Length: 491
Ligand SMILES: [Zn+2]
Image (cartoon, rainbow, N blue to C red; front, side, top):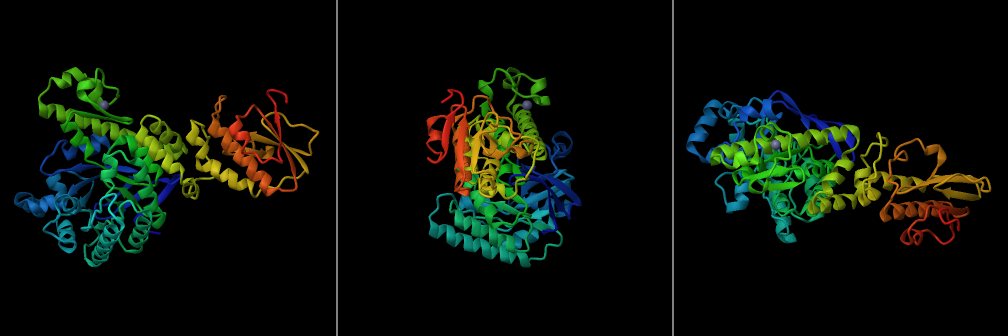
């Protein structure tokens, strides 16, 4: 068990966690969002973060501070917390981003970690190599090796009780990401940013981002706090939390505001296109889009940045509540159905429902079927696996969506998308599911898969499936030896 991070309530891979930041003397509840502060360009004063938005942690860039004579002297003299006017915990980045942008930087892991320590950072970062997505395998592997050497070097630098990030690279090569996760987890370092996914998120490639994160997670232990580096758009917080990410950082709140862009949980709007503010935050309650358009650039930027932070922190709270109540997958589905890119991410996530299932609680309040994706959720996967182990008593068994029938030795209930189950389980999760009266094809097909599993596990039993007019695509998947009865048509 890593002693700085404790995992509490879980929902799939998502979890509520407690991150101890000893140097700051605080414990941060995760998932959490870190506003990014560019010390050269303050859009929202960091002193407002705690009271107005509920931020417990911010992130700033030690490389930018170190590169500017004035900022460097002030940071060394006053300390980072005093300089930024922020009492919470502060994470610092190292210049890896600048390395990726400009090809070279004039610092190294040892020097920048010592500098981060000297200016009072609570969580520091070595100089890793952010390999861009789609880099060829040779480049990704070679750069990963360099990153790994730097993590090993970082372990040897004496930084007192400052926590240190161990970035996980590997581009879009899942096996490299997994190997990078395992290596990073094996070091004595503390937090695990999944790096170089910003280009994927900027291009709305949420499916590729999902694959990269899940691969890293397979290498990392379950008690590793994971930071999705550069994830600042609230439309993907629910998905990212469902992937098992604990920390997010938002530069987006300020960068988008500078271009008059307005964040929402389902995408981005431009101020020019808004007739109304579709939001309950104080900025949106007190101003109209028309009034904000008429303001000076600086005022407009500050107000939009304020809204962007409010909507982002609001979504983090919604995600946390959903994890606690076991309804995160419903929230992910709702976000997925608002934007094609989040839908891609959701579908990629469902491709790995076995990975999610391993840490999903066996019982929650209720399973809501909210669309075809629900048929691929971990709960359905787990029920199908359980059917391999459930024995039937009789020789001649009815599987029915309706009433039992005494002509058979035994009757089992059938509920799409789960399929058959013994009536004794009817009051247990997830079979207490709320499903629509107008089930979709995917739900019936998943139920047919359940019928297959039960028939395969009980080869000597005769089965009859009494169904309420299932579509042909589902009935075709039922083994031929299962007799079919259409209860709606009576045939
Ligand atoms: Zn607002």
